[in-house]
Length: 420
Length: 69
Image 1 (cartoon, chains in turn blue, cyan):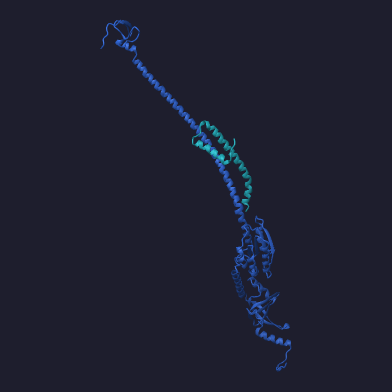
Image 2 (image 1 turned 60 degrees about the horizontal axis):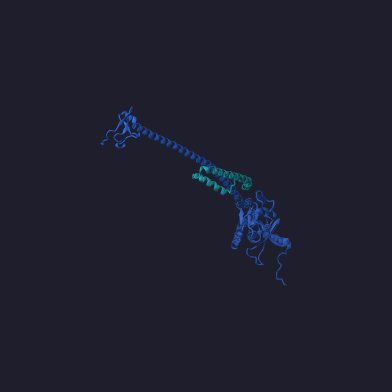
């Protein structure tokens, strides 16, 4: 192959060439002239330092797309990662991110790279929020947000499947509520990570396993933490696993104010693991109250009422009988007394009447006494038979008669009879 | 003197009391009716006391359920 190039300039050694190139790059894009670069993360790898392959957003299918090999050394990455985590941001493929830094050249591999000194967290937060909203929209359009809410919760959810990290505060808070309740919960724990890259896959697998196993309710618990710590519960795999469970899934994630996508698609969500424990215990307690305690209470009250009513009834009947008999006897006594009084009164009246009659007769007798008449000059004539002569027919002329006067009797003879 | 079921016995007792209320009881009947009413009341009180005792036995067990919050 012929070369028409005229070799008029100085010929450089490779190292010299890179030194020259580095000097030019330093002048235009070096650490004294840092730039903001925007790109979509194609790959991310972290091992002390973090390495990002960044491409223009939406250029996945272009095999000749430009790639920026960016990296952030461990020293600046430590605090930067904490800031991101505090806001719930975990760098991952697909994110569009603005990075601030400068160009560097790694001569041993002949590679131009980009050293990141800062990341636009505000911009990333907007991106995270947008992705979260997009996820919720997708779940809504697929009917997954309410799917688990339509599963039927057992009236007495005593068999509890628990997705959690044993020994953590959230785990202890939740199980403490169940243990301190008067009910015998049967808890099946599937241990998972509850934060970090591996957590979403483990949580989704645990949900599936418990759903297969057959429990009354699956509870997903995680104590409070930064947004980054809770990011697993905004993961699409977790959300879909919850939505597709045929068992009701309850969540108690984080603390007041946190609401994850997992909370959104769950059957029921509580604001903390403690509150979730209270909720589960409360469901059983309400069932126990309405199906056991309340009937027992009513049974007790009913028994007491029946016995009280019977006691009152018998006492009243006893009293009534005593009074009724006493009244009846008194009535008889009164009746007899009345009769007695009436008899006495009537007897007196009869005696009085007889007395009056006797007195009257006595007066008549006195009035008609013959001696009294004889004394007045009247006399009584009797015939030979001793019969009182009351008319002329009782005697005949020539009959001898006796004439009684007040002081004796003398004989007489009838000489004539003369009618007047 | 036998006493029937509670309700039957109560009906008989009520009838005796009603006959007193209505003045239907002659002096000849009074003692017999009073004797019968007394027997019924005593039998029912005995039955009630037995039932109360049985209920008192069960009450703590039911109360434990009611108070088990």
